Length: 59
Image (cartoon, rainbow, N blue to C red; front, top):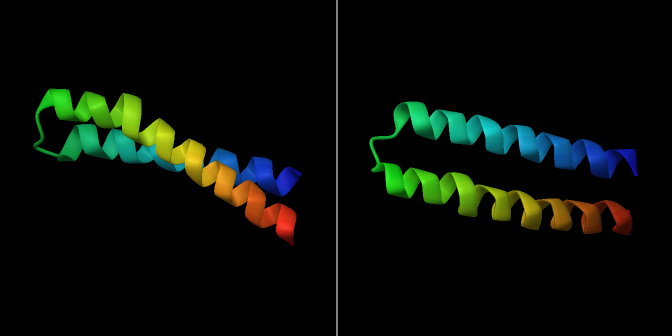
């Protein structure tokens, strides 16, 4: 169970880092950046966290 939590925390940290990197370095319009920050990255973390949990439970 602690491995699942550690994996999800790592995914959240990676999403925060990716969001920060995108806002500082990408020349995309603000509307696209907000869409990524509010919709895409949280959904990606949720789906990857679910996959990680299933993978850990199969072990």
